[in-house]
Amino acid sequence: MSNPTSNSPHSYFTTHHPLFPILPSKAHFYTTHTTNRLLLWTVLALASFDQDSNSATYFSLVDPVRRLAADLYGPQSRSFKTMQALLLLCVWPFPFQQTINDPSPMFCSLATGIGYQLGLHRPRCRGDFDENAVEGVESEGEEERTWWGCFVVNHCLALRLGVPSTISPAHALLSAASSDHPSAPPSLLIDLNLALLSKQYTTLLGDDPSTPSGQRPDPGSLIHAFESQLAQLRSRFSGHWTAVAEISYYALQLQVYSFSLCQSADHLTSDENNNNNTAAAQLIQAKALSAVVKLVSEASKPDPDKKFWPAATKYCLVFAACIGVSVAADSSDLIVQISLLSAVKDAVVALRGWSLFPRDQIARVAGHLSTAAARVEGGTAGAGKGKGKVKEVVRARMTANIPYRVIWGAKHGRALSSRPNGVEGHVPQVSTGEAMPAPETGGYTPQQPIGMDAFEDVDDANFTDIFLDWQQLLDLG
Image (cartoon, rainbow, N blue to C red):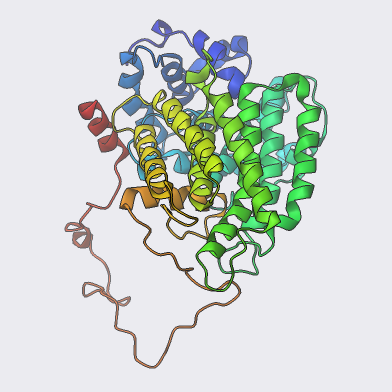
């Protein structure tokens, strides 16, 4: 690598830091920047990013920084600053081709583990986690902000994957969200409050322990309370509301509405009920339409800082487009279809503006959305309700149910099944009439020791390689 002083991190604190302010002040960072290699080079890599010119410096740092992040046994691998660096790599990930090649969930898991081990979730009890803990005004605030950021990143990645987030909001997070912090960055407080509200309702609606899929049977019953809390949150931070906050606001609306939309779509293809024309279902569709159009409109406005937006903000646009495709496919109202498909097309244009390579993940998703919209458009021209469906049956992925239905449907060209995987509230029983065939074990039984030669012939074709993925992107680009 070149001398770190040749690429000043000044631009990072101008363009990136305001959007995710977990690092200390610029002056403080300069005095400590040599104490952690991963954090230093992560900041330098992000500072060198220039989407307009495809910075060669940025591309040259991708592999080295990823290899530093993957060094799980290095002397700095469990440090607080390593945690910060890992979170930055989740907020602004390097380009990749497919979701499976994105290391962000692994980086976030490691960052979360470091935070818990350091006791950041119990800031008033740090001595219980580190006998050498020394309290300091600067470090205490920095640690607090980093834990807030860790919760936000953890939850945003969980939303994208359709799984429960792994950080439980304890006293530190809840008290931070409910209190005024004059010295805390408003953007981070807004993100924290939105993430906490999102976790509250997505858990209630999508992680219900009484059903196999986790879906709550009556999602509509909670919508009024949710909308009231969201409106209060927006009013509280009205003086600091930004374009990114506005996009997150509409995305949060769509997250909660998506549970009702899923049930309406499922009833549409179910023999037991068809309530798509009920007033409640139509009201949710109307609210979703409004949120999709407003979110896409906000994201499409000219903004010189748009290229630095976090990955979670860009995903909000993907999420809105997927909701738009789904509602358009299920609606019999031609005006609704036209409005939503127009918004989806605008979202595709905006997404392609963030793509750095012809086959990176953003370009691929934009292509799938374009395909899905075209299929709905072609299938609904002069046709009745229920035509032009492009969705898979996905029920257990919380807010990601509709995105996976739409994207998988576009990838495979048709829905794999229009029937539910199972009836809610009933767990299918496996017949024991015949003995189950023994699994393929390759001759291994638990009593036999495993020699190292057993690993020599392992077929690694199905293993992901983020470094190979990056090299392929460069070759294709």
